[in-house]
Image (tube, rainbow, N blue to C red):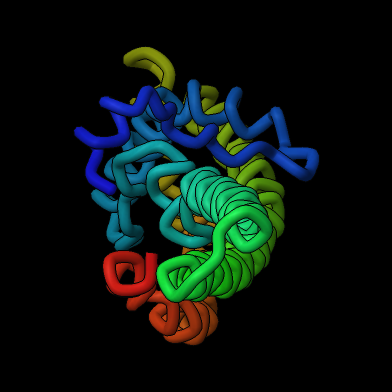
Length: 249
């Protein structure tokens, strides 16, 4: 059914998938302040790199854009598709039961070859509708499973990212303490000139800790991708469902 047809029938889009688990509310707070923290940290990284530290700057983008959605998938959208499939399953089941009732009623009040042909046709449509409802229901269960996995993964990643945010905040405070104002820059440069990288070892350790966390999350993306490929193959088995509708219903 096209979107135009759906609109003409007054059908509403399925609701978005809802959270089934407790998500870390702290993540939103970290996301809001991430740009400021990242800019401060990158400022310190550039200053330390002038002394030859060779540290990579932190990437642009929000925590959710960079890591949560690419890693876990948009579980709300997947859940929305699952809701849609459940609705179609219910609609087909209801329609099929009513069509079966129509055939039974016709058999009671109508006789002859035309009546027999009509009943056979109507019952065939109803049974096809029920079979299609079962198939769509299986697709809905699979989407439920995928959405559940993605949300569980999202919660796990959110916790890791909160830890990452805490490290970023500590790192930003240390950098601001060292380089705030002209005098801070002078002392910072003098410390590095006198003691080398040992003067900023705590900053370097935190920068590397942040980088390691991002690398861990990126590696997890690759691990999850193999699982996603398996689920995609399972979902492909339902790709022919639209072709069944014109021929059987």
